[in-house]
Amino acid sequence: MVPTDYIDVEPPVSTQRYWTGVALFIGALLIAIAAVLFQGSHATVRARRLLPAPDSSVSVYPTIRVLFTRPLDKSTVEGAVVIEPAVPFDIAWSENELRLLPRVPLQAGNSYKITIGPGVRDATGVELEGTLEWQFSTREPQVAFIRPGADGNGELWIATRDGQGGHRLSAPGQSVQDFDASSDGSMVAYSVSEGPSTVNLWRAEPERGGLTRLTNGSNILYSAPRFSPAGDLLVVEVRQIVTVGDQGDVLSPPSLELRRPLDGSPAGQVYGKEQEIGHSPRWSPTGTHLAFYEANSGSVGVFNFTSDVLFFPGESAYLGEQTWSPDSRALVYTIVNPTSEGGAQQMLVVRDLQLGTESIHGERIGDQADPAWSPDGALIAYAYRPPPGADIGAGIWVMRPDGTGKVLLVSEPGVIYSQPLWSPDGEWLQFGRFNPSDTEATQSLWVIRRDGTEPHRVSEVGFQHGWVP
Image 1 (cartoon, helix red, strand yellow):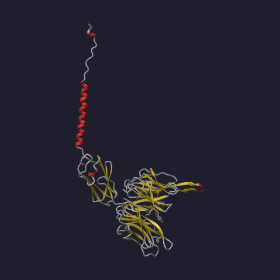
Image 2 (tube, one colour; image 1 turned 120 degrees about the vertical axis):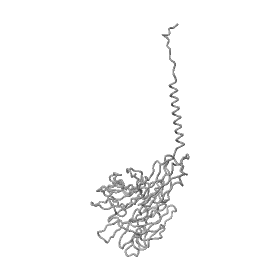
Image 3 (cartoon, helix red, strand yellow; image 1 turned 120 degrees about the horizontal axis):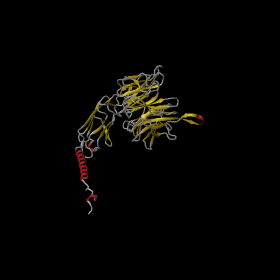
Image 4 (cartoon, rainbow, N blue to C red; image 1 turned 180 degrees about the horizontal axis):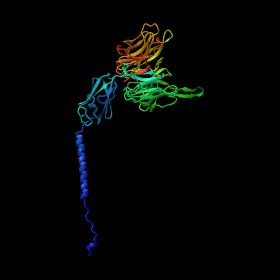
């Protein structure tokens, strides 16, 4: 018999701790599943972000967006969105984000209310939590223009429509060549001459302040910036200083390139390969096409950002006058026709790109120039310049797109008028005024209502000019 002192007795294994852990894990899992089921049965659809921000002041071309917490049943949204006062609009989607796209600019100085619901649901049938409502207001557009500084260089200025509060946007000492404002008024891109062979792009922010250099080239000229309607791209003219044989350094023909307005980074070439020469670009309001002047053929080109470019005759003594209709289906631009006396006359062409038709408009004498289509599509403004002794007044005129209903808005004997530009809401026109009989006079900047009333001066001196929404 073996003594028990030498027997190796292993105690029995206890499973109590193991099964306790399993039970706790299963319990936690069941609680989590129950919580998910409970949350799903009581889930709501909410707005995570609203643009414009509630009670904010924005341009008459606002970005109206709602980011929801989950994808919606789009069919329940179609009839559940209301803009007050009533504005025609389209609906677009980007995943969970609803975008409202007004077909016409809003009225400046108004308050607008957006209502969404009731009845809006997500893809599983869960309804929007209550009715979503918020308000914002639209600010009055401002006027930007270039005027000479004390050193003679062009300075970029901005003022109210009444000429009040004028102040410089560009940096001291900068020599500004041209500019353009984004459709929401948050950015102004402008070109600055930085030497005899260099022009670079800068960006100003009128509301926030501050300047940003967009390009830092040398022996290259970036000019004529134009914002896309969405404000996410700039199209610019580019010329380079190149060495050509015995000719030495020469300026290359212009090409068209895309740049990003936030940092100036390149986004591709639009036109300018090999023998292509394009300048004076203009975006269509939808942002899907680009019109420009093709110097080789003396034509207006229309590019759809694929591989197709359409060309139409468009010779002009004044370049870059092509202007889109608000619906992006037609262009108005200038051509030069020979006269029976052996001279030439500048006339307006309205071309419907969808129908392929064109109509030519002009007086029996004199030049029609600087056409501009009103935001509502009802009128085309232009500057008329008659020959000496004509019985038709020089000035700013408007007409319907079919050439009828011509009305003279402003005219003075001997005065030259130029570049009428519609305000974003279509209520005002700004234009340049110059009296050549005054030897000390320079071009001044004026505005007038679309019915010809309330003409007044914005700046005693103003060359290039435009609206800042």
